[in-house]
Structure formats: C-alpha cells, structure tokens
Image (cartoon, rainbow, N blue to C red; front, top):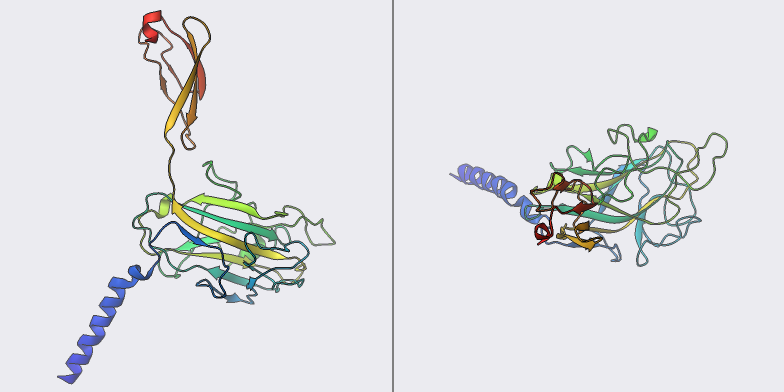
Length: 291
C-alpha cells in the first residue's frame, strides 16, 4: 500500500510538472529587460564562456547601450575574449500563447575578428534540446527587420549554429592574418518579427558567441535592452491632390511595411481604374466619376 502511494505521488508530480511548466514562463507583455538589477534571470554557459554582466570600460565598447549595465563577452575591462569559445547567454522562457505578432528588439554591439569570430541569436521550443537561428543574414525582406545578421558564414560558429550566420567584424583594420572590417562601431538597435513563434507556449532565446584560438584581441559582443511586445499594425490611409479638373494624384500613407498595393479608383468606365504603385495618378472619365 505504501509503495502504491509513493508511485501515485511520483506520477502526480511528473504530470503536474509537465502540465504547469508553461505557466512558469513569462506571459505578460510587453517584456523589457535592461540588465540594471544586481542579479539577472539570464544565465550563461558553454565552453570557455566569459560573458560578464556590468559596466564595460573597453577601448571600443566603453559604455552600456542604456543605463550602466549590459552583458558582454571578454569581461568588462580591456582584455581579449577567451579563445576556443563556444558560449551563450540564455534568456528565461516566454509563453507567446497570447501573442499574434511577437516582436523582438534589443541593442547590440560587436567587435570581433571578421568572418572567424562572432555570435548570433537562436530560439528553442523544447527547453534547449534543439536550437534554431532567429532569421538569417541579408537583413530580410520585412522592413521591421533592423540590423540583423551581417555575416553569412562565421567559421567558428560551427557546432553551435547551423547555418553559421550572425554578427561578426570590427571597425579596426586587419593586422597580419587577422581580418578587419564590418564591426558595428556603436550600439545598434536590432529588431525582428517572430511571426513563426506566435502561439508557442515555451520559447527560450540565447545569444551565442564563438572564437578561435588566435586573433582574439577585440572587445567581443555585447547586448542590452532586450524587449518583446505585440506588434501593432497602423491603419493604412492615403492622401490625394487634384492636379487638373479630372486628374488626381493618390499617395498611400501609414500602414506597416506593405509589400504590395492595389488601388481601385472607383471609376469603372476607365480602362486604368486600378494601380499597384504606392503613388499614382488617375484621370477620371468624367467629373461625376470623381464623386
């Protein structure tokens, strides 16, 4: 009887943990983390990780993006980041069940050897058992995407990310075999619409960072002011200007990054009653058609 009771309790605890685990995730939005508190729900890990939370005072990255604290690799002072590094900075979990268009925004600063060292942003839907890149290099076609991956292949991200895309580069010129160029040079506001994660109940993010064993005398990668919110789409509207008695210029305004336009000028007698341009003129077939 005692054994049966213990087995029943174990089964109850397992079922309860699985049932209520999503409730432990952050589900109140907008969410904002500026890393100013003494402690942080974000965690670090990996091989030779040297992520540090605090006020940076390096030659290139010499201040936080906002406030006084941020996360940065290579420590807070002028020291090279660890060689042979495959590390990450991991977020708490988020419950996007109530979000239709979760939008991610943060500040990022990168100063690494170009092409060989760098990092990216990934997400997991299974508590970290598998990870996928958020977006890709090239900026994306969505105008809400801001300052996204600038490198299509970062050699040392092998084994940590696939494809090996992310942020890489330095404002310094190359020296010897160390490659220069493509650094951010300042804090950049990055943004990405996570439409593919809408409705997901257990989402974790991590910033990765990888380096080789040489050419590591750079400031590294830093992140600050991480936020998630529901993307709001402004209503589309238009302006018009009468150019002649029947010729009118129409220009679309507002809206949120429309990829295509379709005008119907309400003039069925005209052979040019429609347009797919953002701004176009239409000559109405008669004064009555304008009304």
